[in-house]
Length: 261
Length: 253
Ligand SMILES: Nc1ncnc2c1ncn2[C@@H]1O[C@H](COP(=O)(O)OP(=O)(O)O)[C@@H](O)[C@H]1O
Ligand SMILES: [Mg+2]
Figure 1 (cartoon, rainbow over the protein chains, first blue to last red):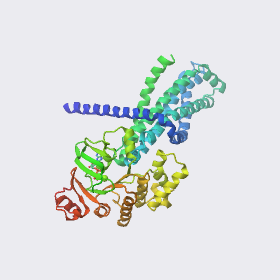
Figure 2 (cartoon, each protein chain N blue to C red):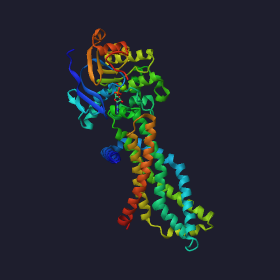
Figure 3 (cartoon, protein in one colour):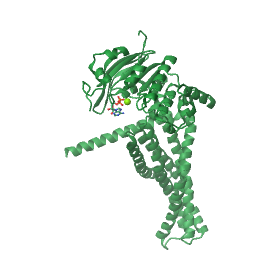
Figure 4 (cartoon, chains in turn green, red):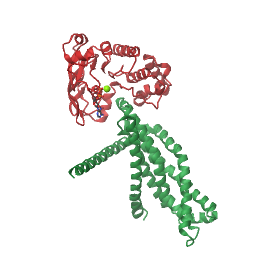
C-alpha cells in the first residue's frame, strides 16, 4: 500500500516536472519568435516537408472519410429524413469536426513522429550540443521552424482535406446512394455557415501547434541511443493524439458556447 | 609559465541521479598552452569539458572564462562566451543533413553576413587545413571515421577560436590517422596560438599534444604536471594508467 502511494507520488512528481519542462520550451519558443525572419528559409523547408509529404495520406484519408460520412448519414436517416440533408450533414461534420480532427490525428502521427525522431537523433548524436557549442540557439534554429511550419501547414492541409472529404461524400452520394449531384450540393449549401469553417481552422491551428510542440519536446528529451529515439517518436505521437482529442472537446465547448454562440 | 589564466575550473561538482561524477575539480588553464586531461573511460572527462562551455550546469563550484563565471550566465551572454571556443565532439557530431562544406561554414553563416561564395571559400580554406577539400560536397555519412574527425576539426576551428576543446580526438582511429590528427592539433596550436584543452585516454596522443598533463580520477584532479614529469612520477594513479595495468589504485569494473 505504501509502495503504491509512493509510486503514485513519484508518477505525479514526474508529470509535474514534465509539464514544467514543457512550459519552459513554450516560453523559449515565444522568446525566439521575434527572430522568425532569420529562420524563414528553414521554416519553408519544414512546411514543404509537412505539406507535400502528407498529401498521399491526406488524400486517401479524407476521401474515404467523406464517403463514409455520406453513407452513414443516409443509413441513419433511413427514409425519415430527406436525402438532401446528407449533403448538410457531411458538410458540417467535415468542416467542424472530421476534417480537423482526422487530419490532426493522421498527419500529426506522421509529422510528430518524424520531428521527434529527427531531433531525437540529433540529440543523441550530440548534434544539438554542437549547435549550442557554436552559439547557435537550438530553439531558434530547430524548434521555431518546426513549430511555425506546423501551425501554418496543419490548417492548410486541413482545408485541402475538407474539400476532398466533401467531394468524397459527393461521389458516395451519387455513386452508391443513387442521389443526384444537385441534391447533395443543395443540402451542402442549406446549412452552410462560415463560422463552421472558422471553428475548424481554429481547431486545426491548435492541433498543428500541439503536434509540433510534442514532436519537439519529446525529440529534445531523447536519451539512450536508437532505442530512445524510437521511444520519443512513440511518446510524441501518443501524446499529440491524446491532446488533440482532449483539446478538441475543450475547443468545441469554448468555440460554440462563447465565440460562435 | 607565467601567462594569464584563461579558464579556471573551481570546486566543480556534478551528479547525475545518485552518480557523483565530478567531486570538486580544480584546474587552471593558461593562455596558449596545450593541456591534456587523461583518465579512464567514464570518469567524467566529457562532462568536465561540457561544463567549460556551459552545456552542463554545475551542482557546485564554477567555471571562469577570462574571469567571468559561465556557469551562472544569461543565455545571450553565454553565447558570446561560446564564440571564443571551438569544440571537437567525441563522435564528431557533424550535422548529417548538411554537406561537409555547410557543416564547416554554419557558424560563419549564422553569425556573420556572408555571401554563399564567401562561405564556400572559407569552407575550402578550413578544409584545406585538414586535407579534406575534395569532400566538401559530400554528406557526413559518406565519410570514414578519420575523415569525419577531420571535418569536425575543420568545423571546430572555422570561427578562429581562442580556446579549442578536443574530446578524445584520436579514439577509435587507426594509429596513422590518429597521428595525423595529433599533428593537426599541434600545428593549429602553433599556428593560431590557440589554447587547447584535450581529454583522452590515448597516452601516445597525450605525449604528442601536451605541454602539460593532468589526470582526472574519481571526480578530482589527482595529478597535474609537465609532460616530462609524467613519465617519472611516483603518483600511483598515473603510473597505473600510463602503464595500462589492471592492478593498482584505480578500480576497474
Ligand atoms: N547527460 C547525462 N546524464 C546522465 N549521466 C551522464 C550524462 N553524461 C554523462 N553521464 C555519466 O557520467 C559519467 C561520465 O561520463 P563521461 O564524462 O562521458 O565519461 P568520459 O570520461 O568517458 O568522457 C558516465 O558514467 C556517464 O554515464
Ligand atoms: Mg567522453
